[in-house]
Length: 194
Image (cartoon, rainbow, N blue to C red; front, side, top):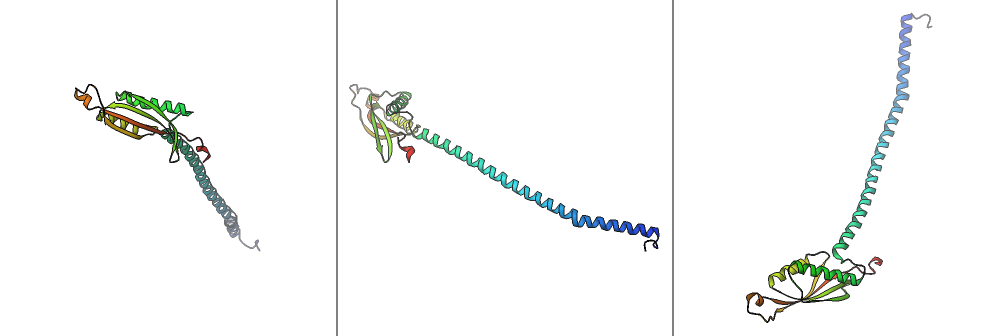
């Protein structure tokens, strides 16, 4: 039957069959494979995005843990007086207070340590001081004590007029006799067990 058809028609039919075969291969083989590859690519991209988010969360959690430890350390440094033993802590407290007094030009008459005790579940140590000072310097001295880190707390303050033998000048009359007790927090020995 093909022999009866003219050669140009045969060529045209062959080209038509070739086009139909190529169309069939593209429609039924190449396009489904391409769609599947595109779908797999989009799934891989989505999973990479999720993996990136999870990695960021892990890094953020590590950074948060490190920041938490750092803030606990800073809080501990800001709140608690340093020192390995009560004696060292009391010495550090005395140095802190005498340094503040010296910066304000105050010379304490006496000072004695107040041993460790517990107040409202917190371990505290303290220093009892006696000094003569005028009201302005007392205000600055108290402000510097309470603004200091580690936390220093004025627990007791008794103010009386100083009895000066040389009450002739005005400055001597303005002097006040100050008895004060300053406490500070120290780390509890069993704080790690809580």
